[in-house]
Amino acid sequence: MDKSKKIASGLMVVLLLIIATLVFLWKQTGALQEEPFTSTSFAMGTYVQQTVYGENGEQAAQEGDRAVQELENKISWRVESADVARLNAAAGTDWIDIAPETASILQDALDVAERSNGAFDPTILPISSLWDFGGENQHFPGDAELQRFLPFVDYRNVRVDAEQSKASIKIRGAAVDLGAIGKGAACDQMVRAYQEASAKAGVAAVGGSIGLYGTKPGGGAWRLAIRDPDSGNDKAVEMGTLDLKEGFISTSGSYEKTFEEDGRTYHHLLDPKTGYPADNGLVSVTVVYQNGAMSDALSTAAFVLGLEQGRALLEEYGAGGVFIDRDHRVTVTENLKDAFQIVSDAYALAE
Image 1 (spheres, rainbow, N blue to C red):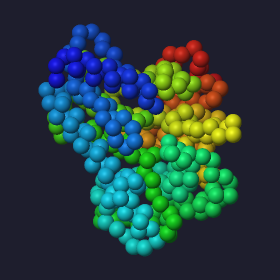
Image 2: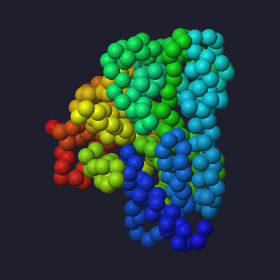
Image 3: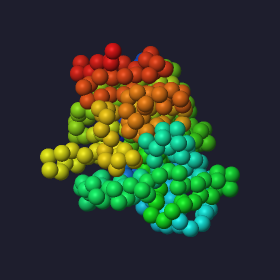
């Protein structure tokens, strides 16, 4: 790839990252150490951005793309041959064989579901499909329809045997959707691909999740920006920054997938207990954790739980979090206070 193409590719990555839920900002300090390989692709219904350092950066990025695609073909409920699609089709019957990766992600999902008392629930599909956020028929389904399908939403209907790589759904009508954990899981797979390809360092971004690998060239921390929830997708700006040397970061925001009907705006972060969008004053939750899949699931769970219960859940896991409410107050967990900084005058730390 010649220099002009690399520059154009880099500009595209910056643009796409700016409109992502969680924005990755790469800021060089001092002289340029080496030029990274950057790429942008599309998977899991979103953009996949990679910045990889090292002589084999391009190979590592290719392996990263392959890892995401392979994971999607295992955990998507939309891919007929995928483990999750087959699991849903077999609901109410017998156990089925699934890939070890799928079993691990399902197990993580059920762990967060149990410890969040169902605020995160991988069996949300019967309800989320009624709303069809981002689809061709997104609409408010009505309370009667929601009440009809709510009994099928219960994570306790899913059983996983990770040792045997098997899973089952107890009742027909229940169905799994791993969309709220899958993008973080994709970051896990991409970081693993970088490691296996012996890349020096890298940043993998899939939708609202990011994985950091290796040491940033020149040392120091990677700088990531948290989006201002009030800024539009066409002109997203930052409200704060996080300086991190490692880990995985995921954001769940009420601005991500929305539609308006009869003068009311609905967002896609549904409360599994009511079937309606969660409404507890929060507009964004960013979670930092050592595992991408868990950071993704925890950001959704913490958003649905609300500030106090969400913060307690993150403390239970030892995860970090940044909570933003609709009054522009920002609450930061103790373990992230030294890493986080507000950069917008419109926001202030909660007292």
